[in-house]
Length: 120
Image (cartoon, rainbow, N blue to C red; front, side, top):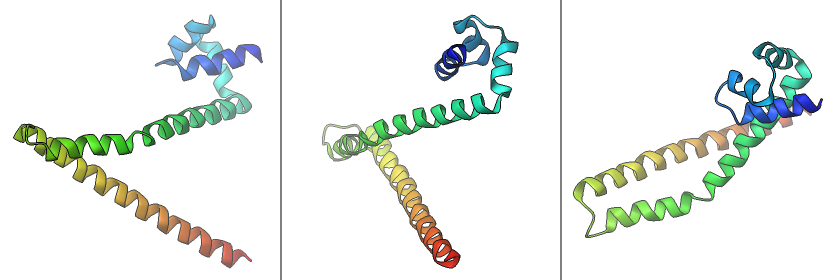
């Protein structure tokens, strides 16, 4: 299992499976064999999701600062017109995306609540 732990770490930090195999000193075939093992693949997938979740949390902590910076560009008298337009566009696009995502999550919560009530 020690090699499989190394394989998971290499897969998570490599751009390709070939690169991951090379990092841990196994053949591509061996690595494909690991990935074909349901338990290995499940653990690899769990760890990959965890990595994405942690990265997402880090990005979320930057949202307020990024919004302030964009607003500063839009409101600044020294920003170029192109800079203001680009910053305004980014604010509008991301605002729309976040609004849409929030709406979808609220609807999903409602659907889950209805499903819970119907299953009782």
